[in-house]
Length: 333
Image (cartoon, rainbow, N blue to C red; front, side):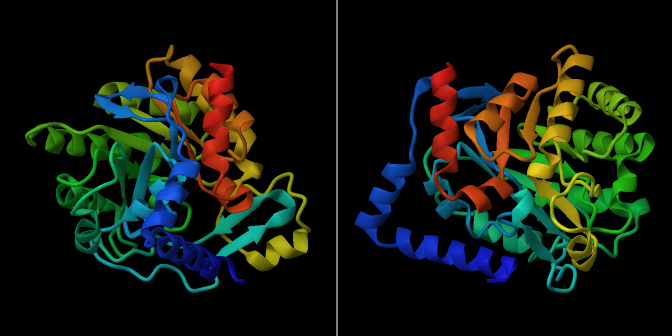
């Protein structure tokens, strides 16, 4: 089945399964791993375990309740933009089985912030932390991009526990230019000032690309310190195509897009380690990129991440991945 169709089919089947009360209870019980040693407290939030679902899987907030049944400690919805947009033409999601990777050029396809808030209203699974990943519409020029981010922040504020500023997707033209020091500092400063006007400030994190140089990572450390945001998510997908087992001809046929999964694992860990060491451990990091086993997750945690997220690994390893990671972490505890 084509990858994007398979994604929606799988989520639909999960929802159908959970709708049967007894079956749903058994399903949740099987995949749940509860242990105080897994709990993490960061920026005022209590996570029941350190394993989250990365943004991009649940773009419109339609699946987070169902996905929580797999045992996630937190789920990030989005990326959401102010106005609905179709994203890039299909096909736009491709499997690379030989590399246990994915290439996507989805292009922030989503139903818009109002549709997202409708999905986030109502009862949430007990103890589940939900983050909101926010971005800009494709047609919005970078000069006014800050308005898109503030609109999404205002709309989602009552319904999410933390925010992630996405300026690192390679699939929206010009978006990664917002990672440069001056525009990024300006964007994060505006969001922080808006945050201070709210009844209670909510954590703001920045999602960065694995393709940044060490000099750019030094800028990120400085920006995090200057703007006093709460942390960094490292990393998004890569535009690199180095060291792939998939034949070059097939990669060429797939075309542009962000590469995730095992091919980005080593670089994501390098970025985490660099940020952690250069900041003297002062930056809270959520590690993501190529996590397909407990060992992969522990590697990210040892490098300096406080939490981890999965997506591509879930595609290749199946719904038991979260439980296996939690069990692996407990063995090392």
